[in-house]
Length: 205
Image 1 (cartoon, rainbow, N blue to C red):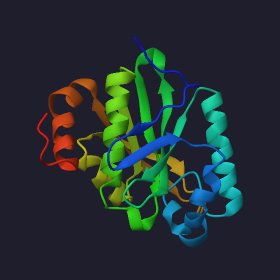
Image 2: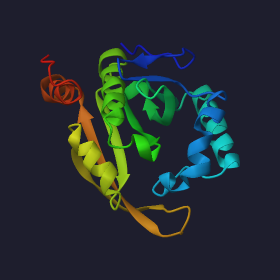
Image 3: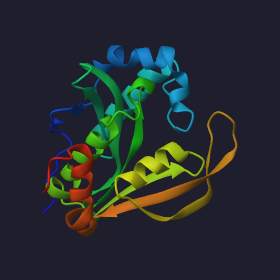
């Protein structure tokens, strides 16, 4: 049985990070990345590279939640005591027990610090164990090796490549998209324990 309500404010957290629903209040918290690190969105279909675009990004995310299509989280780093990025569930199909995770970005200082793995752990645990998803999908442009390697490191399998399926908003160049996924049986049998070991080496589930 699906256990998810778009109207509920879900808080996902552990000792390292907290994910809370993105709202208008996060504009000021995230503005520094827009002003100082616009290159973060080089591979993103959604740009937050100007204050206007950041405001638009937040507004669209809120509306997508109202429309019951997506659910976006702001990411809080407990060690740094600040908001450091955002991530979301998108293409949510409750009737067929599947969703996509994506539109993830972090400030440059917070990339490669473990924040992403902690967030992915919380999101995957919630998706498979609370929402009862059967399939969680991820996508990345084939040239975005940082994202692809990060997804492989959390246990994703490569499903294939969608050729020339997207257009870069900045350059107009068509791009290929790699599709990756984790299934619920893979989560239960291998991925959960593997990822738990990476974020907490002393923990053996």
